Image 1 (tube, rainbow, N blue to C red):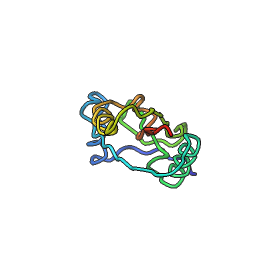
Image 2 (cartoon, rainbow, N blue to C red):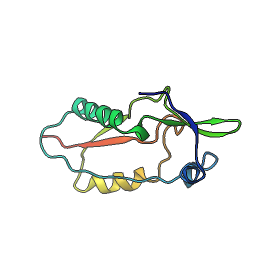
Image 3 (cartoon, rainbow, N blue to C red):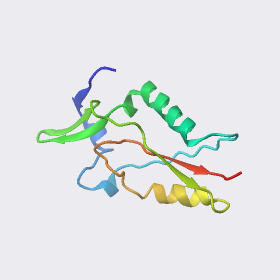
Length: 119
């Protein structure tokens, strides 16, 4: 991958509000995966998705002259695993997630969570 460093455009700035993380746009996508899948396999899948999509290979840095997209130093997409405790727990988790600021908005533009069902 080429090293990327460019200033955010005016329209991209609408999605990034560093002074007010609660004002940033956060979306939740939910997928149901059937069959046996381990956290290691999920992490590998996230790795391949990140390698394929340029916007997942960058993060935002704050410099004196503005906000920049930068590729150097972008970590892999983190995966958090939660064991399922009750029916429809995923709804509560999705609702909570959209109200949580990113753990480190300077490093990630996406986070991932897996609700694991014990068999």
